[in-house]
Amino acid sequence: MLNVTLKRFDVPDEVRPFPRGRFELITLDGLLIGRATHEPGYKWSVDMAPSVGTSRCHLEHVGLVLQGRAATAFDDGRVWELTPGTLFHIPPEPHDLWVVGDEPYVTLHFLGDGYYSK
Image 1: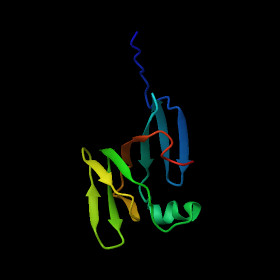
Image 2: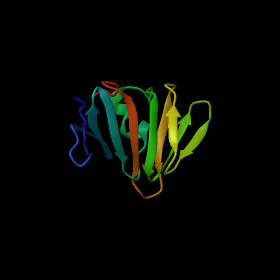
Image 3: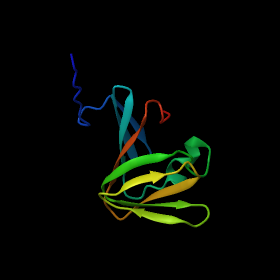
Image 4: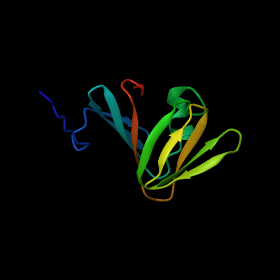
């Protein structure tokens, strides 16, 4: 018999708050899907770096921008703007990210189970 699993971010399996944002997680048959919300003013190197212990994010990201705008920058000067409707892959090279404008930046992230640490 086939089973169908239906879940909504209204009732996530887990919520991980972080400075100026939150990461809501849902697991579907071993696939971890996250919805990240970054509030205006968020900058990874300011808000996350102190708790992570590195000056830049080193994780790979695969996702879709739902709302708002952000910029991501690499140490070699490459910068990209992320806008609603954009599918993105950010490689696991050190990078920074910050919200652009006064609207929350909301994204979906699609990566395997256990990828994002607590």
